[in-house]
Length: 279
Image 1 (cartoon, rainbow, N blue to C red):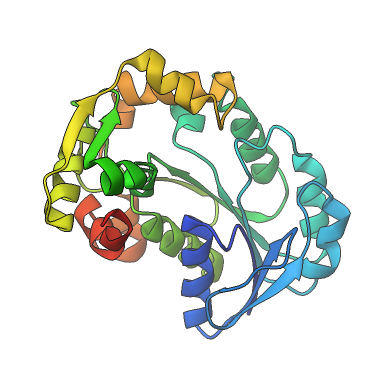
Image 2 (tube, rainbow, N blue to C red):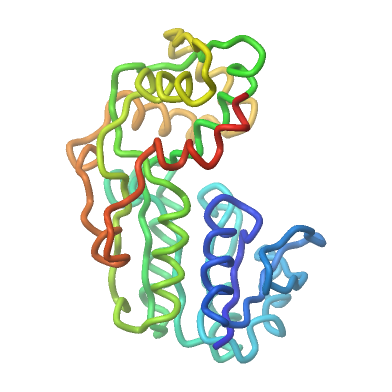
């Protein structure tokens, strides 16, 4: 079988590509620029989701396509992307969406993802939609603070969310690409327990073997920092989830275990693989 993976250098896409390659499948990773350090068994192909026609040759003969878009995908032509995927003979598409596309479908920050979900579901292909909650890997944004100041400033220090390991998302995506038995499903993906920023900083402290202080950060200060790399609606939507999660966003989903046959990884499991980044 041959699979096409977008975002293969990122936290989730790399896990997807690595898992598929380990199954002795042919894996094509696509990006606009040349990419080094891909997982073994993965070949790079140049293509751009902003230019759907560039996908046609890359997807030819592929069995399934993993679709991940930057931001919420508002800048992309979802129907044209799906049409190009179909034209290559792809039978199955797995879309990485967001939990907030279900919990906050009318929000400005996530409504484009909800529209892309609808496009995928109405495509006539076999489809699977993945809606992960917050990523454990978002803690990487704290790494420089930990290394240089042995402190982490973050808002909403005592609000817990069931953060999910990107490796689990990738393995669920790979399983959905390989097997048709998951077709037509929407999976919400979370970790196995609620974890607050203060608790995660404590775990980082233990992992690096040094005291790391949690510093409560004013929301306005956190928003100003977010605005340096995301538009205002996305920053506001993210802060709303972090500070005022809905009951559904606090739930522990059974879907990782349903697909993979094991419990989801904890934040500590993710941290064990990335502790050196914080040292």
